[in-house]
Length: 389
Length: 133
Image (cartoon, rainbow over all chains, first blue to last red):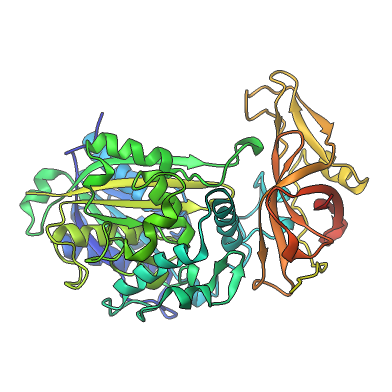
């Protein structure tokens, strides 16, 4: 069963706060849900499917369904780290196609900035993890795991820090037009490579921000989408893929996007060259480069040349990306960037991105997420969206 | 410029049932890996069920303790001292996460030959690390 033509994104909302010390995580989830419903022109009673991931407090969906007073007949708590919300879009489309729900609500929220969490601290994943005894003593952090992938890519393909820096430069060029962005000041390649090295070869400006906040999406069947007053965004194709260390036989220059991408393109019936705008998960600059290669925007190993010289800057390059400033400059709520990737893709397709970064006649957009850590285990999700009639 | 290795407080491995053999061997200065008696493949991290063929006939094997650095990163700004995290490909063909120790961290490179040494963690456990061979 294909989901092509079976579901649409009808509501999207990004929480405006970047620091929320006075709101609970549950409240932030609910505020995002209210925002997305208002954007769609729907009410809470229209929602009959609910989707959330590991950032939802307590018993996850059960806690949030109670908190928001939802009455649903379909629940999905798929957890693949920061990519979860793009997988939720796919699963919501599947559930709608199968008749399990009509209006699906997806929420994300968190306050890592207020709680003092960051990518330079060990994460506490709890007890019973099979891999932890063999990894935790060595100090794996979010940043050094992506750094190890970057180091290997540089070794195999000659990728340079200056090339990676162009990804941050492009994000910052977009962020200057976003009044909510945490880092709205444009930076240069020199600024990036001269910022302190956190973990070789990644500099401070190769890393995303740590922010509070959240976001929400509403996915609904096409008949409902057409009855609303908002531009229609069709879900054309989706793919999901976990990737891991495979019992000790792995390479770190390929991400799960090498499988989720082709699956999504095949279902959508389009090719990378058809994509007008791309939201690419940017936990670190290297994350973007690897996914661009794996999605087929360029060949493996050529990502450095592809991203250089402003090729990702809207109005300048061939592939405008992350026109909200992305995780590198705008926000990274709950340390999970998949939700905001979908939201900016929806803005682009609706023609509602900031005029300075809006892609003219944006018809096809891609949203790509990676969650977990590239140097151990991660989930990849690809969603291809189309502007409806 | 040099970044000499410094000992750091390593987190204790939070053992699950079945992990004792590996960590007791480490205390004796031995690096163990798992091999599957059915498909013959090595795997890491060690499991009672082979992740390649799903057989439950896996056995502990003493690794040679030598390998090469697949990738690494010197983490310079996340704690009291810099340290080098790495994936090391053992001569048995499987790679494992570890630290590169007892050397100038600025001289580490991908493809470098390394050999196992053992470092003490919190709670008096011992884990395999690697140093240039």
